[in-house]
Length: 135
Image (tube, rainbow, N blue to C red; front, side, top):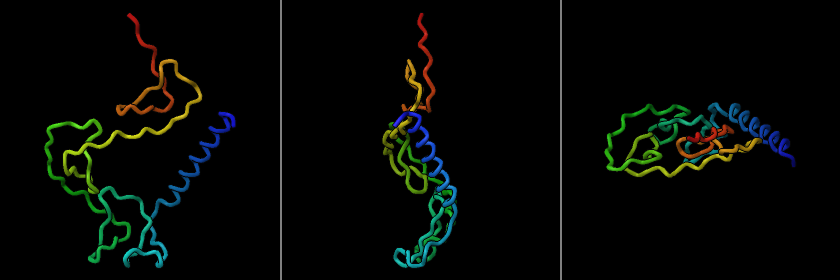
């Protein structure tokens, strides 16, 4: 398979995934037979702070929990990739996040001085580094 064919295949696959996300990015209850512990399942866009629950502990449709104030935690060391957070977005301890895994990016043109990277060391698209300045 040629590089152009692979590139076209990746573009088509990406468009299919984006279309699926757009189509399913709404909330509706699934069939009543699809329940967990008597609670209906919902297909919703993610909520940053989780979903509201009723008095039985079941998810209340696609209602998101509001942001809550997080307790201030002081740590003696800094974390290169930030601190781990709970499901509400609050830091609970001084545990560090692991280094992120970088997405694989395929470029058609190689760069003589390598590709540009973000602050985590991951490649940024297919942008080339500039030639080093010699004095």
